[in-house]
Image (cartoon, rainbow, N blue to C red):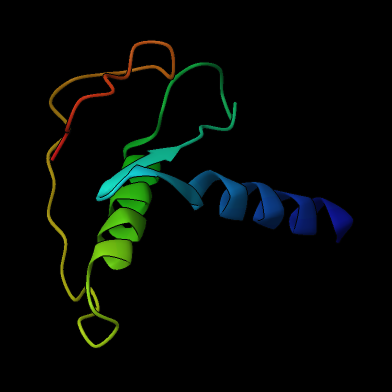
Length: 82
């Protein structure tokens, strides 16, 4: 059971964001399977960033995305992705 709790803690740490400047957030990537970043992780971080910029009465109700380029945590651009 403690392994599951550790995985949950790592997941929550992965989607936690730091606000670098207003409306610009930075997230970390945990090394789950090497240097690749999963699309679901990027989407979760995008939802978290959006949630920090909207009023609390405007929750996310839908999300659509396409993964056209493969990135690693070493090559992920730091410019605006959305």
